[in-house]
Length: 229
Image 1 (cartoon, rainbow, N blue to C red):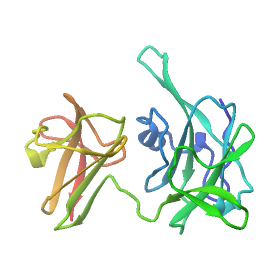
Image 2: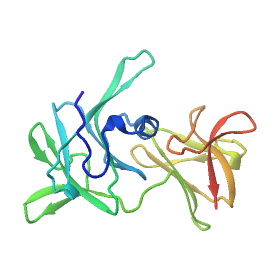
Image 3: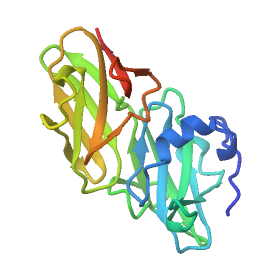
Image 4: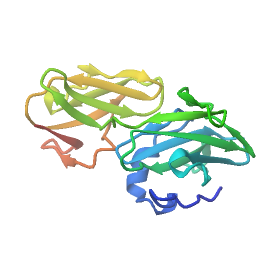
């Protein structure tokens, strides 16, 4: 496994990040995708194959190269079912966007998975860019008109449903829309109050792993909790 270098200015090593919090963000990432922005982290992924992948950022003047690590997904018997390269960046404060470039087996390149790129006229280098000004919380009450937005990150091509105390735990009323591969979203009107909810994959109820608010319902199920103000 590649060793992770220390995060300059903004964080710590991958192993030192709280394991519960980190697992909540990356446990369901099984394939490379464009950068994922959370309220605390930006997650970069690449396919396995190269011997080494590093990343450098504009807010460090591209002087520090951070190493990707290998993330393996295993089945119940411990056998590796898939692998990808992963780097987790603690979000820099007071920045609405970042630019970066990768070094793959000694060659500098823009991120081949991220379609958002920009051109540095001064250096003549193509860079990749991530907009981080607007974070996407798990469930946000935006306004009475728009309602409450629920967001689920998982594998692409799934049928993800939403059920909770607001549906009398009927999970077949709301199906979430896959806005982009692995990114599911649903906005529903909810009046002020406290609600219990789960995501449903087939017949399996899944708590919201990025929402630390959990509770047991009167029916004895473990669920996520949201309060709409």
